Length: 369
Image 1 (spheres, one colour):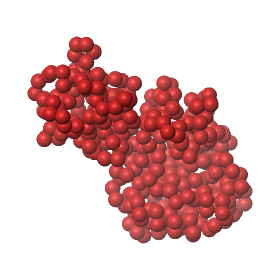
Image 2 (cartoon, one colour):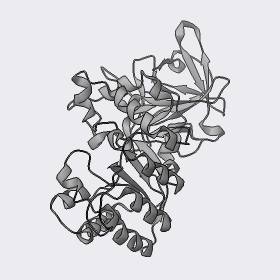
Image 3 (tube, one colour):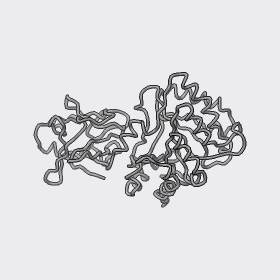
Image 4 (spheres, one colour):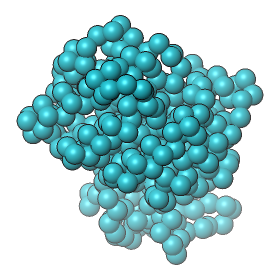
């Protein structure tokens, strides 16, 4: 499924990092001391240091260096999709470009390197929405395709110290490592963005020093007590892989259930159109039982006080709602405590599940996309 909000790693435990590399694979001639992309050697080094990384492959390079991707998988790294030609997707789609083809051609180039059930996707440059638009034209197209059934995206990042700019300016790996160390210490955890090649500018690609950067950065991070996980171990990624449909829940007064990507509060919002905060990921648990993933990557969880919060990293019985179909196309959502989700009559905007019986305030239009 493709979401409106970037999937990041800010819910990882403090001191935990996920290394991700974009724009490869690539391989340069000459010795390892020469500049240029060296994806294979980088993968070997990271594995030797106990760092499982994720490599977002560009399809035009994956077709040329497929054996490198096979080697990365053997080493325990994850291979993911970064489009075929690396275009800025919102403008590409708006101009009539075929974004599904961009993913499908890359998928064909990397599919035998993908033993996992779900493939992760990162948009080039992190571009996902047209300027001034609240919803993604890219997600709208991709979610209408078969790709939505086995892809998760867009994968974002929490930490970026601009390695490409260092290679562009001919600066050293040591300088770049110092910038990343500062950014990592400031963030404390999360997904780190780096580049094992450059998709668009040959001059920068030939100056890439990702391998040298890793040789400086990883031992120092280890010495400072950081630990490393693979992308598919991040809680928000794990929750995203379980989503099979997108939902909007609209109450009797036209307000909708909204959960911010930045917090855990769940509330009702009135507006002319549903914002991305009002789009929930539905996890089908069978027998009309559903859980709902918030844009922050966590699950809606009824508290014993009755308040609903988006604060559950994993699913337990408390996060399960029984969705019951009612007359007029409406639905009710019942918790494990046998209370119903309700649009409170007293005007409170916070979402509660504390109604013991059903009136119009407990009836919702459950719009499934």
